[in-house]
Figure: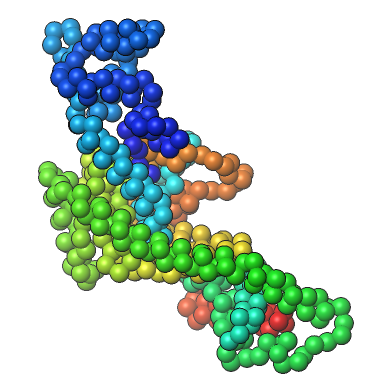
Length: 145
Length: 322
């Protein structure tokens, strides 16, 4: 399974297909500005159009930096952000990811995975097996010894 | 062969695979067949027995309805009613079967396209992990007498490695997971994948997917196929452990990769609840390695006899049905 920079939502429009609505709005602004911005720049732009908290904008931009969509640079106490890719590059990457995901799922009959079907609730199973393995008295040796 | 002769396909597939399912399940339990290679052989017999019977009754042997062996009691009239059922199924399920077969062929093409896309984005991996991959692949290919396959690197997260491609399979390596692994882990993973290539598992898997899909209406065929895939992995695990000289360390690699993928957040969402007591395939693989069950083999001649018996009984049963 592959992760896009956000969950893919085919029913949404534009950037909102892969980013949250606020995330896509922030990115839209940053791409249009086409320069380094700080949180305050985006907050002041958005506050003029809708009610939004400064900390919300800060959180959104931090999340976008974690997803590597924005690059962060710290200067003193202020973080400055620039897009790590152009809008066209981002769109291409999204399309490529979606196509690759679809192809991987459709072409699974021609795959031999090392590990597949990893599920979110497997952690307990892994812990239990690791404990069993540590206690296992087989020790090092060839298979079946 | 007239199209209406195909009506027996559905009856044979459904009842034949169901009958074979019982025989195979009983055999595996009764004879304690644990060796993955032998289990694979039995599941393969179960999957193909009904098709073989269908082939025989349309070529060498006669269908009962054509030979005129129609009897006048409830039991035989019941079997005759299956003929009508098969004819009805032909009308509705026949197009679906053709579509599934076409889809299966398309999937082979999709695999080829996917591999080309991955190759297009592949970059040489620098650093020690890249050297490990190249060294392990070269060395193992010499040991296994295997032509060196192409290694494709991708930055897609969520997997360690897989083999992709039907006729000239390549090893696809996931760089984000690879970077969390040691040399021993990388060696284990790549050895496992190269063994898949040596066994032509992607080609066999694709062909068996086609067989399963054209018998999509038979739950037994899905069971056999899933079990076959699990035993295929267990077989490669056992052979990998043998080549590495340690099953414990390799089991540890399986668990580590499992955990790395989970921690990366790239897991399948959970849509269903497993039945109580049903072990996951990954769990079975790790336990098999720990317990070393793979070496306990049924005598070769005994297994051949068993497989032949299952096949013969299934075909005789099909002869009674139609």
